[in-house]
Length: 399
Image 1 (spheres, rainbow, N blue to C red):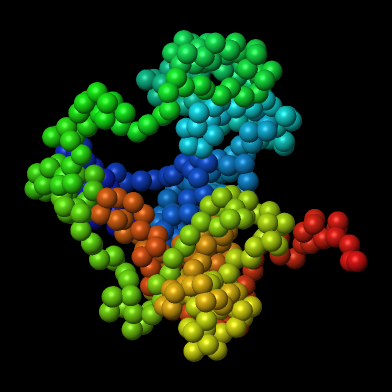
Image 2 (cartoon, rainbow, N blue to C red):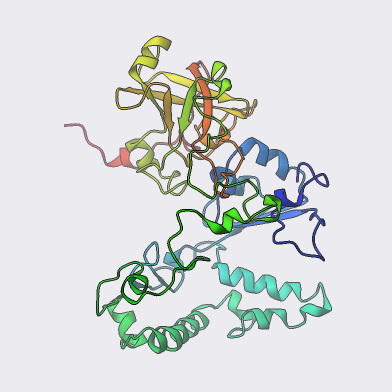
């Protein structure tokens, strides 16, 4: 979005080659965010903020007003799983089903994702003759009343899935009504689940060109033009060390001498639950640094520090320990941004510092980041409700 139309096909991810689309770079006009706190979880947030200001429309669907929702033009409130009927698998693809009945009616004007998208499908019918009856085609079990009355339709979809998919193809004998009553169905297996059992016991080929486990990837070895692949960067066909974009071996350490890593916190799931005051009381967003580094810089636990590089700056308290390597600092991912007038994140989200370059295989390179830090007088704000007492203080008593 920032460089359009001067964007290469590999930057956009146009692969494999398509004679009709090749070289035709899309001019993105809007973004539809659904169930993803994009502006809080992807790399180089300041660059993202620059890009979205070129858009004509940003729509965000979520159950809470996240940082991404704050930047949206249209915010569609989504019902939580307590407010709709559904079935779930434990993360990730576990061996039992969980029945999730509706506990309460949706609060305020919130609707389920399926209700919202069904209503949008009906409204799209007016835009193009090819979209005639699009609402009914999108949700064939419902009429437009589904937007206000979803229970019977959801029940119909779930029971049909249970009987037509689960019982018909997964060896499940339990009826839909019994499953709803019990709440959980746990699969039983005739034998332990072992990876590659067929290859080991029956000699079935692996899904590789040679049919064997390949230490040398013949697929990678045959690539001559990496721009026409989903990777974009050359990947060695034999495993070997690739120097990260930024590391303590980089000349940039003269200006940014610390390697920042941003692991998952224990007190939230990525950015989910960061808006719960009780959890923020239990664990504060802080930067962990080695005691020798801290002593050299005159930093003690509890001091407020600013962390920065060429991409951004954040403000957090410091935690000093021997359990962190010298030259390495730790800042957990997922804190909800709180920008001051100068664009400094007072909440301490490390993705204001991360680099928007993918790893050679296309993953986010969150942990290859160089930064500098120092004590500061800038303000740290642990949450948007900073001036409001957490409910936990109401129930505390001094003994």
